[in-house]
Length: 320
Image 1 (cartoon, rainbow, N blue to C red):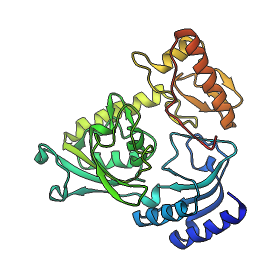
Image 2 (cartoon, helix red, strand yellow):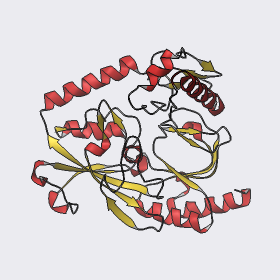
Image 3 (spheres, rainbow, N blue to C red):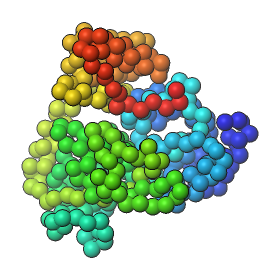
Image 4 (spheres, one colour):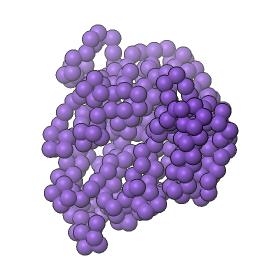
C-alpha cells in the first residue's frame, strides 16, 4: 500500500468509525498474545455490524487487503508487518445476553430444554464463561479459559479438554463478501477439528447464538476450577504465546512427539519450545516472528524424520 493510499484510506475509515479507532502504522505486537509482529498499515477498531459492512465495502472497492482479528490469540504476524488493514473485533464490539426462544428462527430439536445466549463476535471467551456461571448454565466450562474471542473461537472451532465450541453453537451470524447476512449452523460452517469454511468463503463472524442447559452452580464452579488448575499447572501461561502451537496428529499428541524428539526447551533467538509443555512455542521476551518460524520448522522436521508424522500448526501466519 502506498503512503498516499494509506492516508486516503485512513481518512475515509475515520469518517466511518471516528478518529480514535483508526490507528496508522500500528505495531501488531500490541494486538497479539505472542507480543510479536511488525506494523499494520492501518488497524481499525469496530463497534457495530454496520461499520464492518461499510468498511469492507470501501476496502474491496479500493482493492485494499484486509484481515479480521479478535484478541490475536492464534496469530503470528511477520516482522515486516501487514500491508493492509486490520479489522479488530474486540472490546468495542462485545456484548452478551439471553435470547427469547421465540426469537430463534433456526430449527433446534428439544428447544424447550435449552437456554439461548447471544454474544457479539468480539466478546472474550473469559467473559462468556463468567456469564454462563452467573446464569448457572453448563456446557461451557472447558471453553471459558481459552484465550481470545467467541468470533475467533468459531473460526477455528476452538476446543479444550474434550469439548469444542461446535458442541454448544446453534448458529453464527456472518457477513458475506457481498455484504449479505447469513445465519449458519455448525454443519453449514463445516466445523471440524480446528477448522471451518469461514475464511475460505470470506465470511466475517458478527455474532453467535449458543444453546446451553441449566446446571448445578456448585458443579459448574468445581469443573471450572478443575480446568483452570490444569491449565495453570501444565501450560506456560507466564509467557506470551499463541496457545497450543500444533494440531493434534491423529492417534498422537504433538507435545509428546516433540518431547520424545528431545526438543523440550529448544530455543532460537527469543522463541522457545516450552520446558513446561512441549506443545507450546513461547516468546521468552524478545522473540521475533522469524525466531518462532525457525523453532516451528525445526520441530516439524525432527518429528517428521523420527516418526514420519507431519505436524500442522494451529497458529495462523499473517504478512509472510
